[in-house]
Image (tube, rainbow, N blue to C red; front, side, top):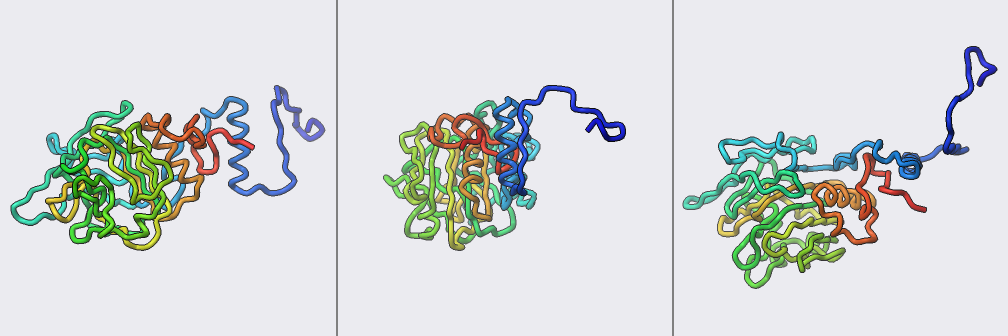
Length: 302
């Protein structure tokens, strides 16, 4: 105060002061920060949200970040992982003689951001066998579906943990005979304008979207250990083609996310790729994108 040596009183306008007589948890601290920022119009000054903020990120492929992609002519021969684990997708999957796989190429932009395009016989992998998936998210524009293909999201050279149902007329992302019950029973949503949109159903009930439909596949609550994969958009059997189309972003978490963290990843992806209107109106990030810390809601309530 002014009575101390060299001290002067505050000179300016005070809009709000909050004092607590107990130590706030980190979560509470960020809730108060978010409340003040949104109340006084300072939310733009909050740090930007990134998926690694929530912890437990196993794999992060970001099509919008072209610095993570290596080109050889028109081919993308490597797509680097941004999770910090260095699971860079820089190899073609192994195939028996008589078959060939190709590299992806630059895709058509979604919401003004670059994507990576996979043809039916394109695929990318890395050398490590990854497991323990608890949450994952897949954003893209599928180029085809139904009896003619576009099936496997994740692949491995020997196993078939993510086996899709490629038997026409079924159009489901998982096949009951080969995939684990834990994976099929995980909670899943497909945010899209397509007729196959779904909210909080099971992963085993999710159908592929129709031709050229942009979607966000969001899966949480995966248990068990049957989630083995090495790469994306391929299967060990080249007759079973991989997911194809413009792939925007893939996020995999090996730590189960809380409901709030899960919703923040959904909000981050929806706003980044122009899909926020496809979120349920009750979603906490329907009206605004998440901010830079997993404990700050878009506009705190209550």
